[in-house]
Length: 175
Image (cartoon, rainbow, N blue to C red; front, top):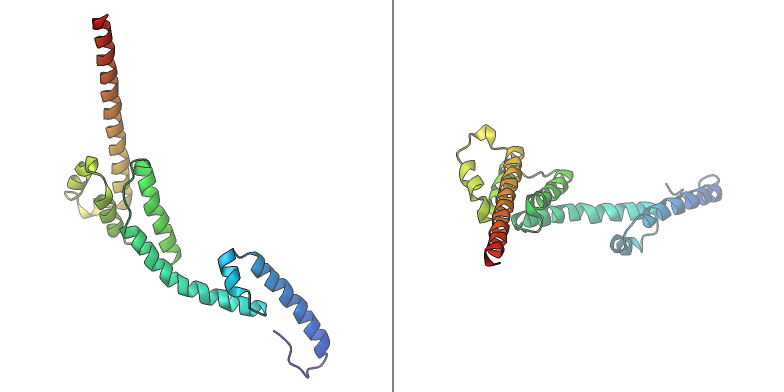
């Protein structure tokens, strides 16, 4: 704490405080990215920087929660990532929401995942509703999705192998 004027050894205490404040402020400022750094550039003391950062991030945590919820409700399937990539989107949002002490309900996670699966996964969607409540967990749903994707991939590989055989047979017949 900055010493008050008029206290004994004011100049010595002020010099000590100034050095400690300078070190603390440098450590805080050097750890910041550009955007927050611009916001604290006018702060005179390390305490001012600290208070400003609290103000920024406390406000942002409410905004972050809203942004993450929006991101959650706008998740879309992308074939390039497959089930693993799709689940990674959910995991990323859930991790951030948990850090903000606002985890998404497991039932909501399951419902949103089912809503975002492509039509090739309709079997999972249909059979999910026949399960008992204790079997409707995030872990069980993700395992079902991953296993189903493997089955689909196996079928596609089988179809590709059959198509390759038919092509080879056609070539042999033509020769």
